[in-house]
Image (cartoon, rainbow, N blue to C red):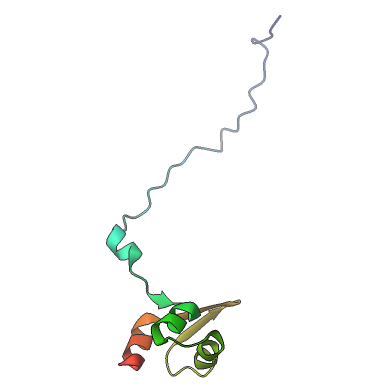
Length: 82
């Protein structure tokens, strides 16, 4: 026997379902990198890993450190490279 007539409704009327629409970002702009990694710099300049980290340590271009992650501003680095 299934008791359905006296079943309590445990749903919360305050909670409502919401959907969010994220802004459209064209794939072309999503693929364009704004930053380089140290490994990118190493490959661009054809230098060793230690030399790349030493260059970033005394960088004449913009470097962003987030925890242990290092990001190099692409426009700043490209201007320095010219």
